[in-house]
Structures are given as C-alpha cells and as structure tokens.
Image 1 (cartoon, rainbow, N blue to C red):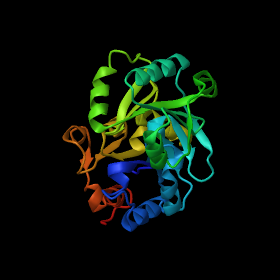
Image 2 (tube, rainbow, N blue to C red):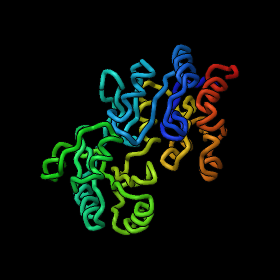
Image 3 (tube, one colour):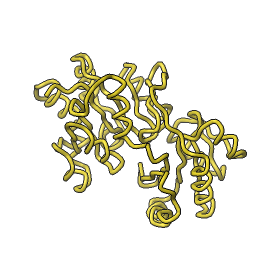
Image 4 (cartoon, helix red, strand yellow):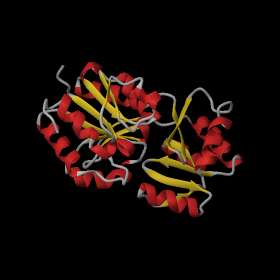
Length: 268
C-alpha cells in the first residue's frame, strides 16, 4: 500500500519526553513530504500553541487543532475545516465548570478567554502561547463561535471531574483529557478521526491511504480510523491493542522509525 497522508499526534508522540522535536524526526518528516506524502500534525492545542513546530519544520503543513475541531494551514493560516459548539452546550459546560469551581477556558475565533482570571489563567496562557482575556460576555462568545471549552486544574481534580460531569454532559458534546490536567469539551462531531476524514476528502484520499500515529486516548479514534494505525511504545496498553503496529517510543524517534518503514521503505 502506498500511503498518501500521515497524521501525527504531538505530545508523547512527535515530541520526546523533554518536549523537543529531534533532528532525526524533522529529517524524516521532510523526506516523507519530499516523497509526495502529506503530513498533518494533530493536537489539542490551538495553532498558536504549535508555533515552534511550524518554525522548526519550515513547511506549510495542515494542522489538526483543538483535537479535530479545526484544520488550519500552519503558515498561511488558511482554515480548511471548522466545527463549533452549540450555544446551549457551551452554557451547560460553562455552568458545570463554575459549579465545580475550576478554571474554565473558552476558545473562540482562535482567541483565549478564561474565568476566573487568576494564576491558572496565566499558566494556561503560557502553555498555549496566547494572551488570555476574561470571560465577560458568554453570549457574545457564542455568537462568534466557540471551538471548545476546557477545565484546567490539578491531575487529581480532573480525574474527579471526568466522573462527575458524565451525567450532566449532553449527548451533543464530546469530552476527553488531552493532558492529565486538561478536561476538554467539543461538539459531538469533533474527533481526530473526523478531522482526518475531512482532510482526506479535501485531498481526495481514501482512509486506506492514511497512517495515524499517537499515544493517547484522544488519538484512539484516528488510530482506529486510519488504514494503518500506529501506537507509540510509550502508549497505554489499551491504545496498543487497537493499533496495527507499535513503533518505538517518543524518546527513540518512534515517529521517524514509522515514517521510514512505511513511507520511505528504509531503516532509520
């Protein structure tokens, strides 16, 4: 099978344990693209949060951001696909967050809004590389289109919240942890798998021509969707059992190893 599209998760997959993109991985991606394969980077972050990757790779790649809610070209910022949340769902999740007394984050029009506006807001701002603004008019944010809502808290609190919100979250909302300290909420149509389907349709590829590489539970949908689903060696066992292949870990250039094996037909 000649693969035409490769989707790669960021944290725990593309980046090593020190959050570095290694020269070996950069070289493998550049060689893969030079061979005619499209590489898309998949992340829960907004496009601002992957600026260093765009600079390091030096290519205008499609980025699947917000865990699949938006596909945007890294350099040109052309939006290929976007899915916002229903207004009533935004209100429900926002009320849940305020009742739980956690830090609630809203992304709308690639801008960051936070409540309460405290130290946690600053910490998340640093993480996302975006200046935060306080949430003062929820209706106005809904009117411009909310991409996602998230709760930012301690790992222990997020584990607790994940169980607590289950009965209250409407079926029109998907939610997952993208990091142990982030519980994220999206429209039910949003997933990395759906974004891959949208991107493959945009380019005219079939799912059999897609490779998806990841390590987390928010990667599971695309690993199962792709013609070749690849799990990292550092992935949870539940992720690995759904994968077609397990590559090396993120500290062993696992992405580069997979690209050389399945796209370039040579060893790292």
